[in-house]
Image (cartoon, rainbow, N blue to C red; front, side, top):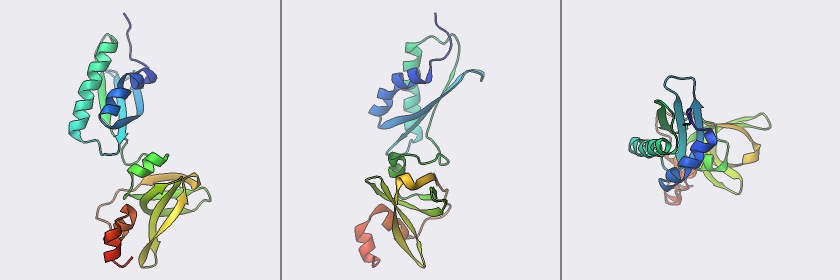
Length: 177
């Protein structure tokens, strides 16, 4: 009879198909055998936000799969969550999922840029930045980004800035862009 928790790789292999069917990708699995009871944390992300109903559904199915695949020999805690706003954007898919969000970018040349994520294509992200009293789109190659983190906003952005980031052509024409 095996005891203990499965490895990170085993958890990913076991749960990946179930999460993919629900439209989510497992970003990370953290296993803490020192906590009492032991804890398995599955961090998932997708094109749509991970809401509470989806978390509950994924937790139930993940727990059933884990219980059927192994015998821990005791209790464990399973947690399913999203990466959170402080997760650095490190891949094109992260930038795609952050479209329309305000980000702080540290570039490889040492400069810093704060802007709103726009379209991503061909290894380049368009970032809407302040240009005097207006907004402009600045293309930045992803390989020039040393670090990127989504910023928490407490008020809605100006509509023109958001339109540029989301590519709303009709709204841009109405605003004179």
